[in-house]
Length: 531
Image 1 (spheres, one colour):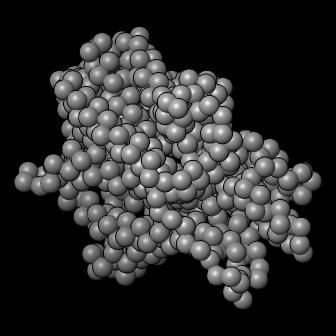
Image 2: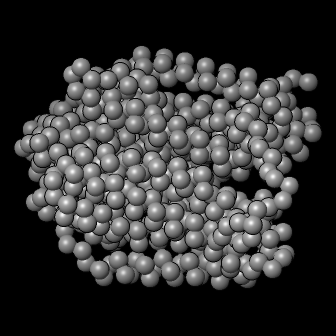
Image 3: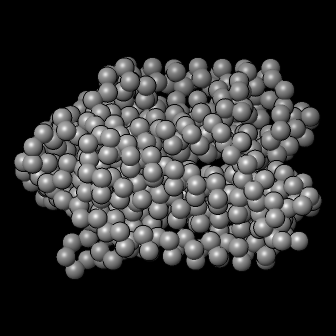
């Protein structure tokens, strides 16, 4: 039988399953790009204002690492799309990973792939269908984005270069996800591995962009995110970068097809280790089991953020010497006070809070994966109550997020205090991390509510996180009304240490998180167990 037979039918099935998710993502990203372009003319009415803003961004290491470089300071499109390009590339990469894993490894894990494979469906058909859907989504996204930017008044060449850059990032990460889906045996692990690759290549791009003369600027070219920015839309377009992106996608996709032939359906190249015949005494409670299932992820996140905290504290202690002129004015304004280092810390800790929310969502989603994988039902059939089982994973989600932020705040505080020679600074830096926790708990609470009341809407947590990210990073740029900004729980987090702590919003955020969690657990007690 032809190894690709049945691909068309699987493509139609995937499009039907994603008929809401994919149009929503495309519409949201196109709106993000078009809104940023439309708001730019009012924010930067003349060349002088654009040059000032671009110079500030290019001379601020933190902003350069987050968003990338503005290659033409005089271009309206260059300055208006730099932040959107950086944030959008990450969102597109995540979408590509989710789509490919959803229609490959997740189907195998759920048993659907084996059922479909028993019919007239070739060995390569599921992977080919997943890549076709992901690639088609990225092409459509790129085209619509380009036309939306042209409609907003930006030059057509730069607009289409921007659309191609976004599509290229998505296609590259579709290929990466195709490989991760072959390496590991669960959808959760495949998605996590893809996200780790995304984080690594984003750091490569950041290091390359912030490196000075004689530094490792070449690291930008190790990253698909970097390739997207090296198209240089609105800054002297480099169309030849598309050759690098396509060549990478072809090679990595060919690797994925080669790996398909070397494993069984349902198995990964990294074989699962057999567990002991009997459970240890430490697995006699739901919490102990939840810890056993999630400890590896938690320890990895904690270690990574502890190292990030050390780096952040060191940078914050020297930020004043790295900036001057308008760069100082911008960072101070964003922080809300005149102390430059404090303003820098408040911004960066806010970003870290958003990222830690992703861990909280991932840990809370384990409830749904255990339920849909039919591993929860045997536990609940014994003496374990629904609330105690759900609370065990919830404790890991909330406690783990707390541990990660505490570790980051502690190492950042130690690093900052050591660099400044003032031990009293430790508490202030540590506090800037801790104040992010109530907002993180609210995001976790949204996941728990969706799990209990409407498990098919379990992705509400990721939607809430994406909304918070967009509102936090682009809300002021788009001149959104305050009520829209207030939809993000992170809007209510004090900008400490740049501003004094007002405990009232922290208390209310904690109350909201507790209410969401209580409502989710109550709903879970009353609904049927579903697969």
